[in-house]
Image 1 (cartoon, rainbow, N blue to C red):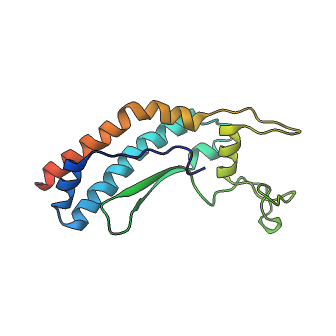
Image 2: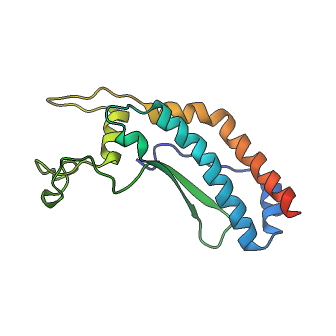
Image 3: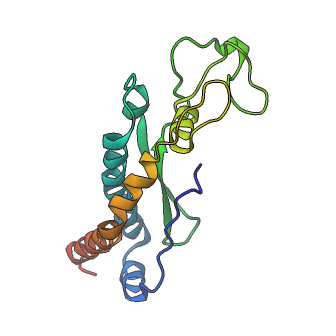
Length: 160
């Protein structure tokens, strides 16, 4: 699920040079903070569009930002939190989804989000409701330009 929506930004060499002119920790803070802030806009769009049968899934979306090695680069993961399960399942029985589903086992919010996004087949099918894709499509036209503008603002504040 993490590779469904990917944005790769290239051609911003001047912005990269400005970041590299700063102390590494300052540049990393700018990148991390900006990605987290812009990621939260996408997260909020996902929450607004998510099905709200119980509210548990939409209450458990987050943004995780990871810096990439020694480079001034990062990635943001926006989506359902890991390790959050719907009530009623027995953790001792294992997972009710996946390759070896266990009857009466737990179901994670990530699994339910995937079922909602892509739909399911079988005895009790769930129709696809591409709320995460729609949120991304809604965010994409302005998200990247807002991220670049926010990084430029932070660079100006830092004097780079």
